[in-house]
Length: 298
Image 1 (cartoon, rainbow, N blue to C red):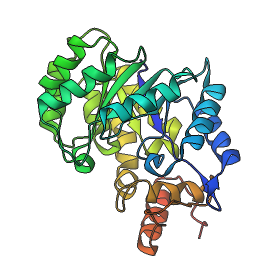
Image 2 (tube, one colour; image 1 turned 180 degrees about the vertical axis):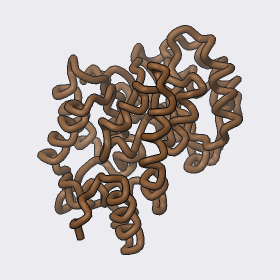
Image 3 (cartoon, rainbow, N blue to C red; image 1 turned 90 degrees about the horizontal axis):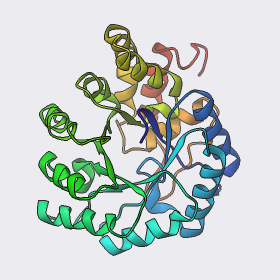
Image 4 (spheres, rainbow, N blue to C red; image 1 turned 60 degrees about the horizontal axis):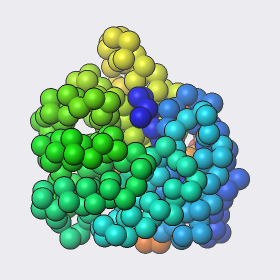
């Protein structure tokens, strides 16, 4: 699996339909600016609001564009184990490099239940599987020792996207999981990615890289090469922007930010609604201060 930046890419809409023209431009923008992977149909891609035929269109187009250039990882997680396998089987035919499987939400399985969930999935696909831990959205936290057991027993479970903001758990992930050969640990939060990278992590699944892909990849490369001080400068330059992207539920702010730089109109699907005026103002200010937007943009 990749090291560096994987962009959790937005799904552009126009008048209620997929805006494939904008989507193709956005994928190419990511490739041209050096990211290592595209994460299609994650939380940022509004996967709960995307229909099955639209899944086919997005995944097939993504793999067509990215083949031989960057990896494509498809969000396939649900809170039903068999339902998750059905989605994985649906996208396998497009030959992405892997699937991202979030911990089951709402039904709150135990650690044993989480183990059995991922084991069942891994036994029914040959694709690479990345576990996604995001307790703020799912209501469940998968522990490092559970991930270790899953990855040890299931050889196609190849990575963890860690979006638990607890620094102690991030460090425990590194301590526990880096002994597994070729297992990758990615930050799921832009604002804590620098810490995870400096602790020995492998990259970030980034929301901010929709807007600033080159800068996010540069930060990773600098840490990998040992230039932590320069990487910290990038982290601090965009830190307020990272925070602004989550003042409303993701992907509301990032879609507004993308519309400001010419990618789509910010349209979302219910139950998500467009960013409020305060969010727009905050985004504009932080994007101007960090140089993403020119000062004259109103």
